[in-house]
Length: 579
Ligand code: ATP
Ligand code: MG
Image (cartoon, rainbow, N blue to C red; front, side, top):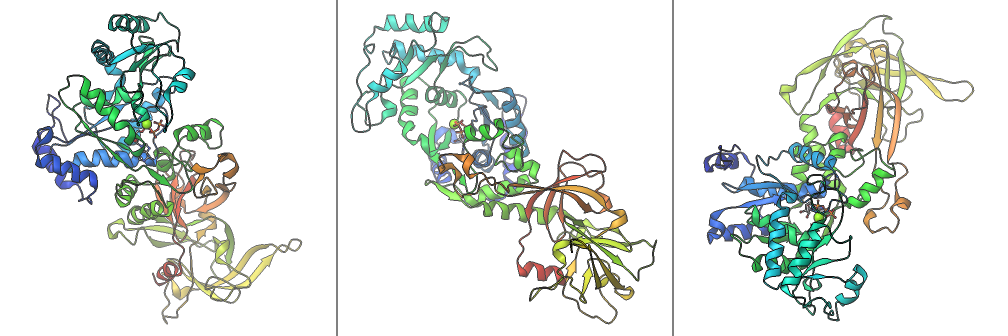
């Protein structure tokens, strides 16, 4: 999409953009928007926003909200989506988060163009709306302490009690509120509260706080303010000021909607956005609470916000997930009104689908077992053709060196093969992928420990390319790396960070951490083309899984993160053996 010089997105550009968007399935939010468009509500405009609080990195739950909000803007002609930082609580916010959030939204494939906003930019206007409420007798300065406010609030079954300051005069309220802003009072001494209804069945309507005194340096406004607006007050007015038509948020704000509407109804406003709630994403074996994720980072339980085990966008990027997979996942889970738990397996299957199409295949042996091919000439090196990606005919092939000594994976050999085991075992013949047939002749063991040191094999010179002249069939195929050409690599195997499917429910998350969430394997062997692989490169280790080159890699010392394993079903294995 492009914007003209006034920053207004033109109909034609967005219409063509819509054409390039894959058709997405319907949901109840689209039904609402379609109805609004039919009635020409908002003059036919669709404008959404993604409003993160910059107090942590974005996670997969945010991705759902991003795909929804930016996706709707893309789908409707002339649609727009703002990126707005909801930075009204300076105690937990940081520019590091502001930067990372922008990077992550862009990486996911979305563009806010020139519509980057900060709620803090509206502080002066918000203050004005508060003054207007006071002038109308709809807000008052309250001197109750936090504890007293709680005592006065009542319960779900009992009405609340009025604050003794509820009938303070408008003039006194204006004076006190101005002095709150001027810094005359200590933190917590006064709050500004909306005067609504202390006996409302909806507790959010029992004179909620609008402003509180809090001396805290703000990452954008510095020390200009010592009073900060509350979320419910700031959010609806921010939406209104930006001309948002549909303000989409998660289910826990449903009971706040009357308050959202109340604030906007008290003040003369040019538009009244509609709040619509949807169910937040919960994903098994992980959790989405930013507070708990921050704790994981601070306690160094993980290596940082971008640790590949984290449910963060940064973590998933480092792990090798493609943005297309995350978008496909968000589309697949849909938008619902009821909270539910989505299986991590669904996300992983979206990740596999995309990588299968795009990742270059390479030979890599994670747990090496040496093989000496006794009848292969010493010193000879051949180059065999490796198909880069059987799913993508345009990906071509590459040369892989082959020699007398190769490594295969320890898993591909059994001295005593179980029934149905078609890989290498004494006396058995297998195919080395893209190369020759080999037969295991002898197992060499350490005399003391009995550990297998290497295998002695023979090869059939007539089987180059993986088929023999007499069409003799073998059932097993192994990947391999030529020993003298192999590049040593470190491989990091990841598993779920938590050992229970719903860690958010656990009282103490530390007790349910999965002790095997990271296994680091050194001395893995990868084909020589990977010597100086660039961080972020995504590959498939033939027959093992998808991996991504980590930023910890050094020239000649690549480090790989396992993104996700291959589905190791017999169907898959057999398909490989045929191919
Ligand atoms: P906080 O407790 O800090 O408010 P939050 O998860 O609500 O945490 P925000 O930065 O306020 O974080 O979220 C930005 C937007 O992302 C909000 O509109 C919120 O509704 C949405 N969002 C957050 N978590 C999820 C989730 N798990 N699923 C779907 N949307 C989410
Ligand atoms: Mg929030």
